[in-house]
Amino acid sequence: MLVGDGGYQRWAAFLEQWRAGSANDPQGLPTLVEQDYPAEVWLRLVTRLTDALAYRLQTWADALIDAMAATRDEFEMARALTQARRGLAAIRAVAAHPALPGKLARALRDQVDEQIRLVQRALEDGIDDARRAGLDDRLVQARLRTLRDNPLTVQDRSPAGTGWAAAPARPGRRIIVDPPVRPT
Image (cartoon, rainbow, N blue to C red; front, side, top):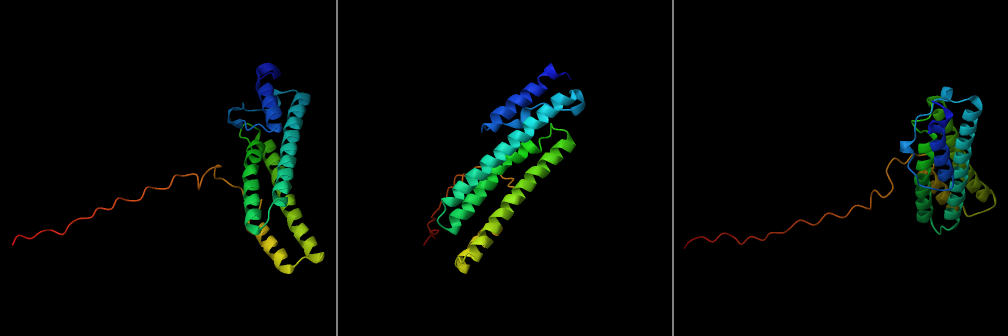
């Protein structure tokens, strides 16, 4: 494979669009083999990949903070955390893409998972700080329970739109039968 074969270009174009927020599906991307590229080209591609992942993670974290700030109760907080978890699916899909060399994909996936754990830990530490600042213990416990019941670290494998998106089943038809008439 040569640099001009399109593999690098397709990945670079995808990463540029994806970094900008595009919802492009990464499934059609070509398989990358490190030995097929000169070292500086491979390094440039890996740098593009890590930069795109870091940018998307930062954008995701900013959106999570905005969503959490807009919540008024624990139900809305749980919904914000669940939606944030769904937002991580695209990031994890690119980080662990099957067209990436296994060692690179594992390293990227581990980095993404570590960043998610750090965000989860920071949220829980923020609640502990609120407790030390004198916030009502009931509110602190409720928020901590919400954060722990809806952890960001859980990988949501259900596609977006499942669950309530299904049309309800039509109720069964009732048939009323007259009692049999007996001859007299």
